[in-house]
Length: 125
Image (cartoon, rainbow, N blue to C red; front, side, top):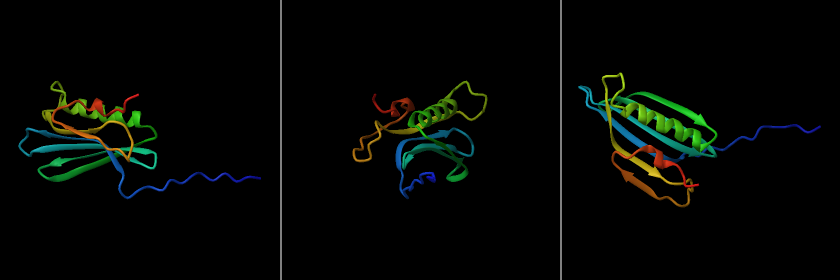
């Protein structure tokens, strides 16, 4: 009889950051929204921090098995926050959007563009 143990993945202390965006709102308390995608041992995590002034008030993380699913959430979040028609009185603008094309930890070609759409973060097919 063969016993089947699940494979345990060794996570790195320093995951690769594939995409990152920083948004600010013109509000009295200087609200901000930071979101990024991490790759760690074949798992992809979308993390976000938000708060006022320089104080983080909320941290969240969403875990995915594929980069496409992680990027879909990343794109949706940025699109929702920067939508001028959103119901919230807080309207965010993009301060920066750092994107890397492709997932190859050995080869890193980061591009920094202010106000660029997050969808360019997807690797070429």
